[in-house]
Image (cartoon, rainbow, N blue to C red):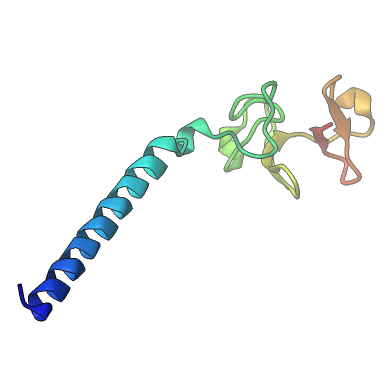
Length: 105
């Protein structure tokens, strides 16, 4: 076998090994990664109210039930809430914020 043919064969073999390795890594990463729907948002707990419920996530006022409005909170995003003067206006799982809106504890 000529030197040129040997170099070509080594290059093809190396390319095949790299290609096989990349395919294996992609398959492993995709199989190991959680699906987006399985991952909970960072601030969400197991006891978080459902979408549209009082203190639950929302996108707009019409998403909220019981006369609540969709209000933006810095750390928690948009939440269904209502005005308050004291914590008792919000219930045991919430507090009255400085903006006089019920928010999650």
